[in-house]
Structures are given as structure tokens and as C-alpha cells.
Length: 395
Ligand code: 3PG
Ligand code: MG
Image (cartoon, rainbow, N blue to C red; front, side, top):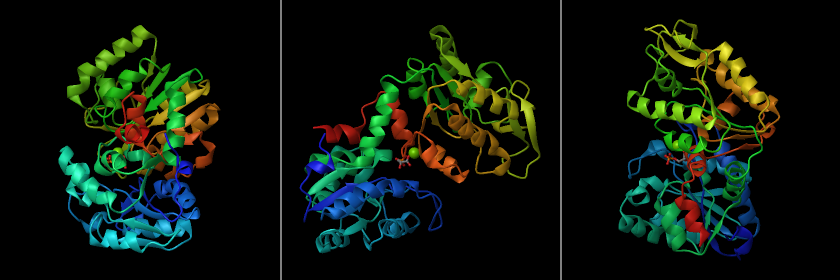
């Protein structure tokens, strides 16, 4: 793969596909981690005299302009972080984008509007994506793929565009892939994986694969109740994916046969309703009252999980242990992050939500081995899938 150092970018227009999909509260950015992670590549290009056109998606608008998903506040934040004026095009590949790109001087940066305002970006139809990629290609001389969080998407800006322009891989994608390669290659053992988040159905492929590579699998978050139910416990009104029970039972059997230790919480924080103010308290995992829902792992489980990580030499963590955005249900996620740090292992935090949780809970990011900018992307990598945005840069 060519890197940006292999491109003669001075005086050229360079299209950087970044992942600037940050959480917003109105037009206030609540976690700018992905913007900060995108700065080094953009800055390196700018300093070498490139005219940088930055493109990204934000949220999941339906293929048409929607002011709630405008990248304008993101462009403003990028400008602050770069310490320079950043231009903004009010469309993605139309008149405004072409004029903005044409007006860039050497070393200048502009952001074009949300890629997903165009139906061609996410289309399943190759021709429709191709038509949009053709229009994007007019904006630049080179393409740099640096949106790690989106490399698992076969989208026009991720997959089709690099086939149309001389291209290189960006520094962020390179760094992310290097870390993930150590996890799939030869991780220092014991290798423990912690999975959380709400849905088992999002994690099936990766669990399947991890049963062949990890030594220990710790499970928390909303997805754990399908595991507890599969073990025969009542889970009250907790989140449950009944249609995944058979699959989960098969995983539990296979783990036992292959000697992979599956660690489930022994207690949970059970609440009367999905609310920070609801009456709540610890309940044993095999005795969750019928009218209560588990919203976090409990105090005994926090200790159990920490103990199961204490001797690990590699830890990959994806997905919060509970509803960490609500204080009463944040303790499991906080304890887990602390346990990662205390373990002394090489720690990789995968993904949007877990990375945001680590920062929201006030941890020092640099204390972790690696905090990935891509949740779905890192899981699909660990699953062994071919990622369209990496494959396209490979040739
Ligand atoms: C993410 O937030 O996971 C990435 O930016 C990809 O976004 P998507 O899941 O909407 O494709
Ligand atoms: Mg996602």
C-alpha cells in the first residue's frame, strides 16, 4: 500500500476520506475524538502544500440534505484543532464543492457537506455509487483513505472513489490496522476480550471468530442477558434477543469444548425502569426480579471481571458494560476501564461508544495501548472479513 509520503502532493488537490462521525447534542460536539484523530494526516498533507478536500459522513441521513446532520460544526472544530481557517462547501459534490475545491490555495483545507446527503454514497447499486464517485473524483487529483471507522462500508467514497484516483492510505488507518494485526496474529497470552453493548446480533461474527483466538471472553452490557437466559436464568424485563438464544447456546457449548473461558456477570444493577431516577439495586444474575431490568453489571461482577483481567497480557474491549450515560449505571464501565489499566496488559479499546465512554468517564486516553476510532470496523477486522475501504487501497 502506498502511504501519503509516496504522493507528490504539493500544489495538488487531495481528497481525504475521514471519519468525522462524532456525537452531537444539537450543534454541540459532545466528543471530538474522531476529529482529533483525523488531524495528523490532514495537517501533514497541508504542510506539504497540498490543497486538502476533506469528506466524511455524519449520522445516517436518508440520502438527502438534512440540516440536523450538517458537517458545518465539525468543520469549525477541525479549523480550531488545525489552527487555521477551514472552508466549507454547502453541498457534497455539486457546484459549491467544485467551487470550494477549485479555490483552495496550497496548504489550505476545506470540508464538503455530509457524504450521506447523496443517495449514491450508500447505494447497493454499483452503477449509482459509481456515478457519485465519478462526481467526487472531479474534486481532486489524489485520494487518501483515512476514515478507519467507515472502512467496513462498501460506500462510494470508501470503496469506489479510490478506484478512480491515484490513492494512498492515511496514517490513522495504517496505525489502526497495525494494532489489529497484532490481535489477529500473535497476541501475548492470556488474551482476554471484553464485549458489551446492547445487541448480541451485532457481535455474532466476532464471537464466532474469537472462540478460535481468545483465551477468555468476558461479557457485559445489554447483550449479556441473552447469555444469562441461555444459561437458564430468568432475566426479568432486561433486554433480550430471544431469536439468538440457540446461537448463544451453541457458542457456550463450543467455548467449553475449545477451552475458552466465558465469564458472565454474577450480579447486575437491576432497575424498575430505564431511567436514572428509577429505584434500583444489585441483584444476583440468576435471580433478577421479574419486574426489574439489568442496566449495568453489579459490584461482585466488577471485582470478578477485574480479577479475570489481572493476569491478561492482551485485552481487547468493545462495548460499555452498562448504560454509562446514566450515573447509577456507569460504575461497571468505569471499573472495567480501570481494570484494563491496572492489568498492565497491552490494551485496545475498540470503537466509537467504548472510546467515548472512556473519555466521558474522565480517563486519560494515553494510558491505554490503543483507542480505536472504529467500533464496527475493528470488530469486522477481528472477524477476519475483507474490509472494502482497505481492499480498495491495496492495489
Ligand atoms: C461509526 O460511527 O461506527 C462509523 O462512523 C460508521 O458509521 P455507520 O455505522 O453509520 O456506517
Ligand atoms: Mg457504528
